[in-house]
Length: 212
Image (tube, rainbow, N blue to C red; front, side, top):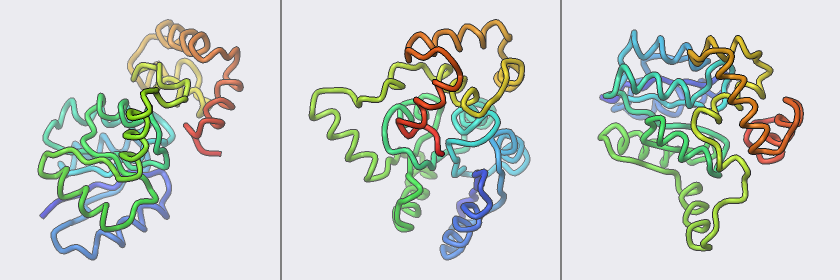
């Protein structure tokens, strides 16, 4: 039996996943969480074999939650589930500790396959994402997103800025000093050539990094 924790900030998505997974007698959904913070708490309490982790959520988000979970529960495998098919998310999540990567538009059969493969400790990346990454490598150029140059921590800070989080909130969530968060903000503005949080959010929207 593969014990699964569902993490997504939309109840309808969690309900849909639970319904799909209930058709497989070898998979048991043992809990749900609607934020990265809740996911960390639930993994500590339930010790699931695998987490289906939404990437873009309020709070610390899926990348930071993945990093925290793998730190205290390395045996819990994580599959990132997202609407994004482009880099930098696959690389960011791999660095954080996720072993699988699915898009929310994937067929149910692919989700079942991913759960079995990742639960066995092997990596899995969805066919849609794999095709895009392969084409990018064959073309000899990197994907065009300006976000590809960001570090994992810079991406975490960026996502929280686009949620409207203040410096102190980000500092508390990521266990960084306010000064360090401000330094990351400056680096983001410099690398992405924007001058305000609003411009940063608009750029993230334009490249599909966050939803409308």
